[in-house]
Length: 169
Image (cartoon, rainbow, N blue to C red; front, side, top):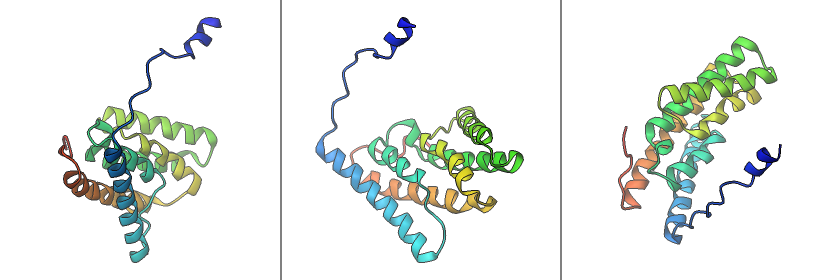
């Protein structure tokens, strides 16, 4: 037991350095613009386009745009696949605690197997179990919202920073 408890102290690595203030400000502005665009279009069109998991997507897409989790294929396919898995589990098994856990597990596995892991999308099955939407949820808000978020990221990340976005499709 003491060996296990000693593992909880970690490796003793240093905390990563803070990014430059400009990088922090640009990431925050990108997240603001993306959510404002998606929420504004949702309000103007009376369509559901916004998911809570999109806020976490913005952390990755604007704060860490070069990592694999932030690439467009990961954002779009990760969200869509996770919502589909959540809806399939809800439909097949009903709104049970164990089915919600199974849905998250399967979403992780599907994203990993298809090489489109996007960690914020792991919350989509939970959102599905909390709200019990119909299958239209895959199109709106999931697909439409993820595509809008990526569209903003494509423009913003190529105007506001030196690197290219995306790294791959």
